[in-house]
Length: 162
Image 1 (tube, one colour):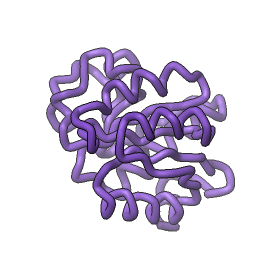
Image 2 (cartoon, helix red, strand yellow):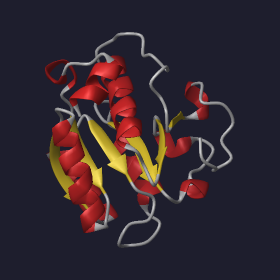
Image 3 (cartoon, helix red, strand yellow):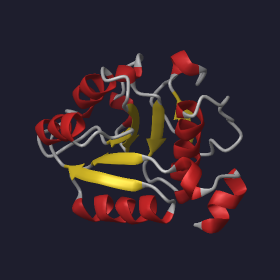
Image 4 (cartoon, one colour):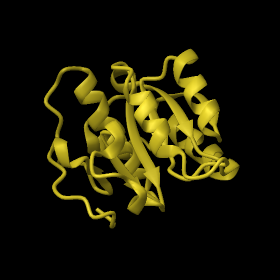
């Protein structure tokens, strides 16, 4: 992971984010939590349903929510994104294999990482979020595998791979 951070020009202490993982597949959630830790971030919890995700979003004070579209209670991730993105302190990023279900307005999310994801895509997306949160102009150079919402310069979204 150090090599990914070096490529992105990030030091973990500069970019440590509190991240809520909204994912109902336990193995994917565990793998993602390990990746987040390797990147120097902190997982504040894992939610597999929309109710759990919204509750954790309110109580765990995440900086970022990585939200899958299809959860244990159905394709409810879009509503989770809408709810969580109402909080100005939470940046929502979709992380899904169901990208065609993302509405044109991205439900308030910053962008999408399409599954299967790469470590580089996750690292680049989180570096971008950290730059935005720090008030620095974000660099789109490391956005390999991360597609910004159309309203943020990501271009037209057709639900395909970025």
